[in-house]
Image (cartoon, rainbow, N blue to C red; front, side, top):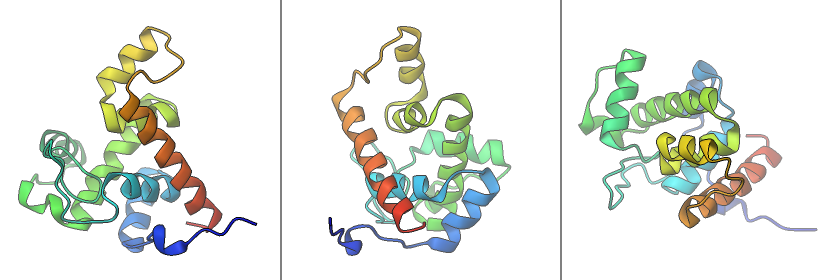
Amino acid sequence: MIQIPLFRYPRNYGDIISDACSRYSVSAPLVYAVIYAESGFQADAVSAAGAVGLMQLMPATARWCAEKTGAEYSEAQLAEPSYNVELGVYYLSYLLKRFDERDAVAAYNAGEGNVAAWLAQDLKEIPFLETRQYVKRVFSAKRVYEFFGM
């Protein structure tokens, strides 16, 4: 029997994640897995590219999501878990309406334009190594979160 160290798979921000997932009809295990892969649950994480917070939102993407949801955009609030998760789950729900789950996760990492181009070329494998690894990491974590009933 395989032992999974639970401490490696945080379940922080449960109420915030659950509320946003309910609002936008996104599976909680998928959101936990994206947060796991994006920031490792570090609310104040900032990437070299400028992505911010738990769900590592680029400010331009967060601004677009805020406009779509009717929220006021605040770059200063991007590191706040409730604000970041709200916008991040909205964006993930948008991608899930446009693509299947694998391609939506790839688009979350590589951008929807890149994924649309790959699909137009009928590529079966994700051409970016970083994105292929990211998708594997997200789905591996998602299986763990599903197993533990997240």
